Length: 457
Image 1 (tube, helix red, strand yellow):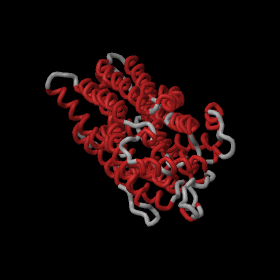
Image 2 (cartoon, rainbow, N blue to C red):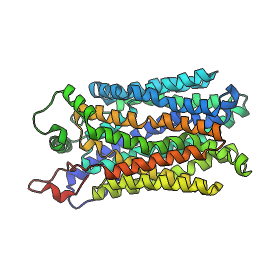
Image 3 (cartoon, rainbow, N blue to C red):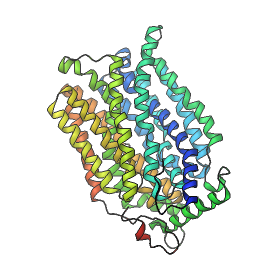
């Protein structure tokens, strides 16, 4: 998982390997479960909408309103995570979202659907930025893009596994006389509750508490991260109070620029997550091409499987070159152009290829993007700033699905909505390329100039 580097000492290699093995697989598993419970609504919609009378506009509103609850509680949740520790707070998040996700199996009306989606967003608020913040406490800057990318594998894995799993549970329910989409909601919620309990006993908040590291490994990691903290722009000079750090992070122009860039990039991933199954189902009316329920699930999984490989390779390249802005921005621009051209050509398998390139671009961009905030924010300010970036960015999860559903009802086509999505993704990519750079807070060996370790972050 870690690429050997001539400047890496043996103690560094051993420490990073042990921390990676301890944290990353478990965090990936948590993220897989999070995305199953968040995005299985896209497959439920294939039957649920007709069963309880939900239009595409209402479905888009319900799918996206998750992110309004997410937005309102993101920053407070991340500040509380800093106060109580990741072990306690992530466990709380998982148990509550699992209970609400299971309750989706009992909804009866469009009002129930919208209400539970809001509550699910509130419950899950803080999970993703909380993990990003946790990774910044455990990994030096030179490793973060690949670690975030490895953690973010949870998204494509959730889609690769979740697509056939979700349609399989729907089919199973229908075959045994149970409403399939209700069974799917309930069955996929159970792991969140179980893993929430496991999380409380398994995670460690900080390197200082890591009894599973040797004394030498713990000392190296704490010293390395401490040097990076002192090098960050927001902590140069007199050490500010927690309140000052939160206010400074939330008032930072760069934090807000990053939030707007993230809004544009995630417009593509959110629209794809919620609408790709229904876009494929629409091929019957548009092209006379019948795609069954299981075929839909497997085709939906293809873009995410390809993206999983591409985003790991791209993040490793970004770490090796210590360059973030062109890697994130260029990938987003690729995604925007690809889906726009595919929809304008308007042929079924060209559209599928467009979705493959959209997935590759947006997920590669998101992974590299998240290596940037941890380089300029620290402590509780990092928790608040990362929470703000993620909450503003994820408002695209509300606007994108709602706009796509509304324009479909208006025009009978998904193309207008996705062309707007492509424009937002492209704008996010361009904003990332044009954003001012900050020096990477890399830690040199004694007597080694920092500039020798890499260029711009």
